[in-house]
Length: 347
Image 1 (tube, rainbow, N blue to C red):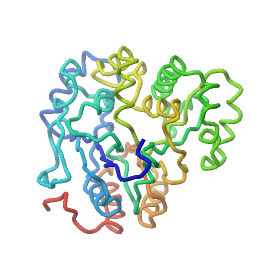
Image 2 (cartoon, rainbow, N blue to C red):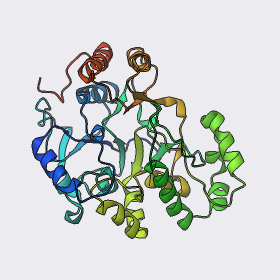
Image 3 (cartoon, one colour):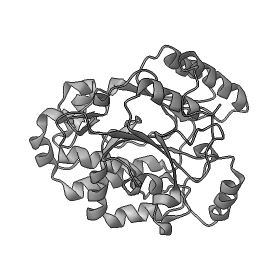
Image 4 (cartoon, helix red, strand yellow):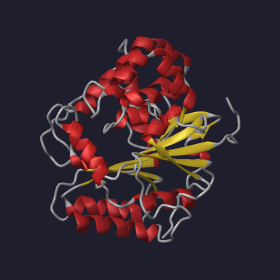
């Protein structure tokens, strides 16, 4: 491993234009004969992408390259001639047997196939933002991904953040499938014994208590899923594909997300099981949900304006009829800290 942090680090971001008529027509063609999560808010665009690029340019100028992964469309304002930017079409790297896809699984599980991608990269969803300066060491230390190895117990909540009843709760099934892959390939006792200081790091705060309590279980019962940008080694992707091709291929074969899929978190869990990570303080970021509750939304705007964390993920739980109003409020919050056009924007 690189003992210094002079290795190139790329950013990968995925995006979809849910209003693209060509994309919508193709989605509709498969929707009636597929199973899985087809909710439209999975593809809704809040027009906040430009603030992601502004945040990268201002707060992470050290980034080597940005790979913008898309169905084929991109915003008209995007400066595709920026030397730090590469537009990656799904068909450029995802095996043809998995296309077209309306699931994030084949998109995320095949990043290692992106031409030119560095060994060290950070994956962002388009709802994850930089709010203040970050360093390379926030993502990699001595060549190892920064992560939070916190064990968890899967417990289906029954309702979402807005109190709506959840049916199926596929996310918990995904955690089970990811964890099964880890338990199939690693001995939990050996994993923790070899890297005890990483599993019982004070950086996890109160979450370390979970690791202490769950140490009595012979197998891993699950891992805490933190909705932050994730640091990955491309070689981890290659290794897991070599050892577990069937389970990864099954997830990639579904046109829409299903409860039987593994997710990209399996690569994070694998890195932790191998000891290929450095502990990261969970307070570096925050997960919040934009919803029909104006008071809760105002909390998000204040986190942005006051730059309370380095990393912010905003989950879309909104179902109201004043979408344009809420979208404008969100954008105005970003304008407070990122008002200037970046080199990734034409206008």
